[in-house]
Length: 171
Image (cartoon, rainbow, N blue to C red):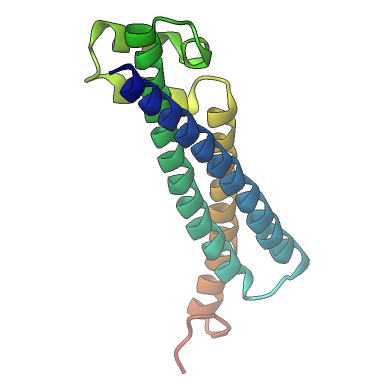
């Protein structure tokens, strides 16, 4: 039994480290792509800015969902390793020290039903890597959306006033 627990503990650790590396890779990739899109919007004052901003909104949503998924899967690994440390091995290992207190209370009491609410709160409210990355992606996505609106509204107004210089104009 101890060999199986040790194997599970080691696998949880490997998976957790793998997911953390993916999480930071996702964020680094998002920074590069969003910076490139923002620079294109700011240097070009063309009709394509609306399309670039729309792509930025789409990319922000995709990267946010990727980050959310890897974070939640990482927490599952962390929680599993914590339970093994606490209940089975009875040591204060790395997962005992890094698991949030509110999560420890839920896991220790066996009340895992409301764990999703605790973790959702941690996504945006606790000051840490997760919240900082999430807020960065959200604010950047909102910025892209505002650029999109700022570019789209004048195009619609110009089209409605007869200049027909709209990207979506029909001959």
